Image (cartoon, rainbow, N blue to C red; front, side, top):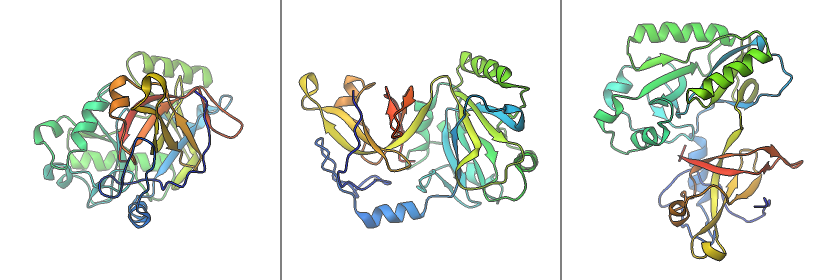
Amino acid sequence: MKHHETGTSIYVALMLGSVFAPTLAGAVVADPAAVQAAAASAPALMHARLWHEGDDPKAYWVSEKLDGVRAFWDGQALRFRSGLPIAAPAWFTNALPKTALDGELWLGRGRFDELSGTVRRHVPVDADWRGVKYMLFDLPGAAGPFSERTQRLTALVAEANQDWLQTVAQQRVANAAALHTLLRATVKVGGEGLVLHRTNALWSPGRSDALLKLKLQPDEDARVVAHLPGKGRHTGRLGALLLEMPDGKRFALGTGFTDAQREAPPAIGSVVTYRYRDRTPKGLPKFASFLRVRGPE
């Protein structure tokens, strides 16, 4: 499928519900005020760029990229990266330190769909949350280099003394060959890939060259802004998703869907993950394929 940028005037959707009036033809308009309100509540977080081959990994801490749901704790409330609240049980939030935390809610490798169903319910199911871990990897807004922040995280976790509250394990590698050996070993046991965080990096919100991710095949997240109608055997159902990338570029994603997903496509405003092989000179993904729905994060 060819990827096209579009000038269609459709607002980026950040919240679900009455804000939208979705149609399969893609004639979807979001209430600008509601979108702006949701965007204003989004927490400031660091976001990873892709690892560039040829870089030296010795200056980085390396951890497994967890297949979880990003969760920000501001000291009082647990939220998705969009700013939407996460309905966690009181025993879960009451045990968290009264300081900002950044991490992933996680059930284990290969259990993303199960986790997503658990953490997105408006009323939490206590039994389901008992298996959820909050895997911490940074202290948003904190001073000091990353190496110092990880030490403080370890101390906070030890003080909280909860089995489900943990820090993401960090390690060092000697060179690029060792990094790729670790990547293959991680993927072999069901891991998604690796995250590299420069040891001396200060915390800074937004996309950062100090925070990098590495996978055998890269993937990215984008927000659904329209449903494009199908043709041929897909007439009357989804043909492609019109996606908007974090930098504002848009493209149509039309491969990787099951028939069931074409009948009931990801909601307007939801975040989806797609895999791709390379990028065009304009920065659009080449040979992109749908991977999964991440939800209204």
